[in-house]
Image 1 (cartoon, rainbow, N blue to C red):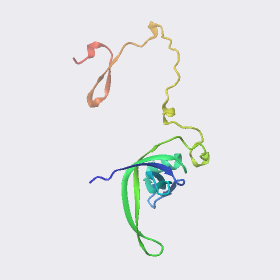
Image 2 (image 1 turned 90 degrees about the vertical axis):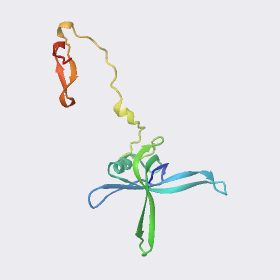
Image 3 (image 1 turned 45 degrees about the vertical axis):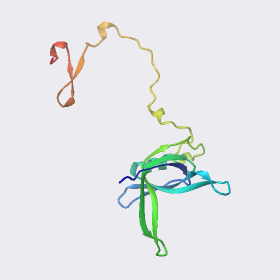
Image 4 (image 1 turned 135 degrees about the horizontal axis):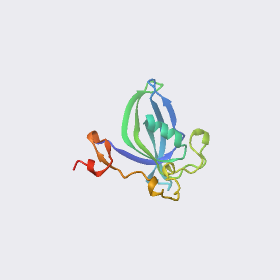
Length: 168
């Protein structure tokens, strides 16, 4: 069987993070996803989809996404049955998120106290290389002797001081 969903939309409200009785993090939120056609009155139509995320994905969503954020989600469809306050049987249809991604510019009006920085954020900024520094070679008498590396047992690397130690 195949149960795969990919969807993109805007959060209708801030995501809610809760803890289960066993201590697992779970986030629930709803996104509005535009349909590709307009209604009979000429207005755009949207579907409102409930999404559930667990553990680190849940914490990531609650930290970086707020109401109005554009989000891309891939996951699976899940249904569950429950009874409402009046004792009526109901069925809930939701997407369980496996992966989430930023799908647009960050919400510039986000509240910094809610974990979403108000500045523009690009994940690559965390891993940007350090600025280039000018290289000044050491005098030859201060340089370390030439060495090479060879794979040893258990894929560990052993230092080989000179070519006479090579196994081939």
